[in-house]
Amino acid sequence: MVLQHPNRDQIRIENVLSALGNPIRLAAVRVLAEGGQHNCTSVLELIEVNAKSTMTHHWRVLREGGVIHQIPSGRENLVSLRRDDLDACYPGLLDAILTGARSDEAIPSGTPSARP
Amino acid sequence: MVLQHPNRDQIRIENVLSALGNPIRLAAVRVLAEGGQHNCTSVLELIEVNAKSTMTHHWRVLREGGVIHQIPSGRENLVSLRRDDLDACYPGLLDAILTGARSDEAIPSGTPSARP
Image (cartoon, rainbow over all chains, first blue to last red; front, side):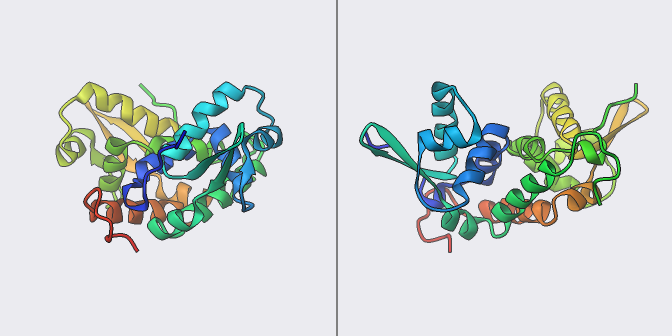
């Protein structure tokens, strides 16, 4: 089965933002941002998600939004971040999001003095 | 009625991205990015949205995501972008998104050579 991906010109920012506007998908993308191709299952383990069927939906949203490449490999899928495409379409966006996700993580909810 | 807003420390990037990951909400935020307080109805007119009830939902998503302030004023609401809060929490994010939305607009869907 060949999975459909938008080409670079078909990527739209609202789809990218919507794809990344979910804690599980954002966590998965942070793993992929380390670079290279990852086995879907290994990403699930890293982000501590057990429901493989739910994750199938999340991978599709990320793929259809133009955020990841997803390539069948045997009985698994290999996933990778489309960093070149995203950086070309939206300079600075991905880095701002990844930095923002890290900074959120450092702040316990409701700590009034933790933000600049 | 006082509308609830997250304070700066309660803003989370996945909520901001999810709020902006919708063409109507993104269009409204682009109007607000011009600065100042706007009357809800005037924004609707600018972005050519007729369904006021649908927009009530969109304003709530933006407000609860920490993207806008929404303040009752007579029988209307005044809305404004929380640029200071967003820039403090996620440096560069809002500008990357606004620039990205402009660049998307310049590219007719399916034009292969339009992207860098």
